[in-house]
Image 1: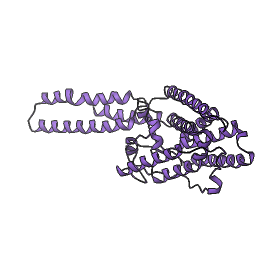
Image 2: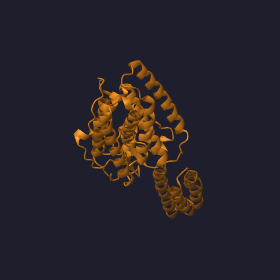
Image 3: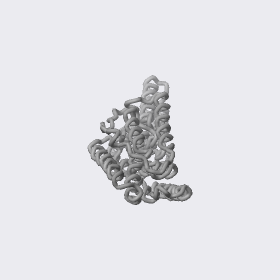
Image 4: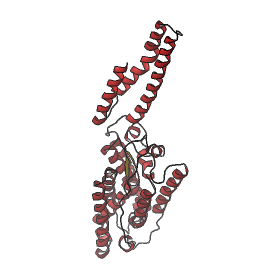
Length: 340
């Protein structure tokens, strides 16, 4: 059920699959709270995730190893794009999945845990918990590894479990001890297994997992009310938490480091280099064929060839990049200056 990472948004990359978690239905399906409440938010969320995946597949996105560029076109999270104004990616990325096994695992976990937690918090409360946990996971992911492409519902789903833990802590008397114990055990085993597994895999988005569960726990602590609480009280609290949570997320985005998109700039440099070399080669051939004079050739070099080349050097020198990328850019700029 892990959010997954792709290192290069410009090419297809093999995707590692999530953990093979063997879950027994009798151990993971939670017993419903005593108060009858209709569940529908969970089913809507599952339907939306599956619908997005189907539409992506019909549009040609790979079922098992989608290219990073394809994921970005459908709203995956990527620091250089998100932090340059495309903040909606923090939300849309939670509905984009990296292959059929990725979405299957995530939706299975949401299917077995979502209805129970939705009955505890109510429909709107559960929706708020899921949304803010997803945003919290995306925010942490951007801060942790801003230069990688990230997608998946894992942050939100970890938040569901974080909310469950918070409810069991804040409203421990609302659920009989004999029922709360197994529920708590299953939740802790699930969280521990996925965190340990994720820490051992380079393509698992630990930032989204930790950010999601932490956000879900905090939101769950504030949302948790006795099961007998009235509808009006639940709606009012959920509304306040949503407004406050979105405000905090908006503020936190202003504290994120803003990096430039080196991959996109490298692609642009490739075009500049191709055009420059062609112009230079064509001009040299024209001189040799006496089609233009040496003075005309000099004018082409000074006023048509060098300006875009030197402008690209300036762009690369002024990019805000991680330290590792800066070393590569310095080498590239050195090559460009020598060629100039």
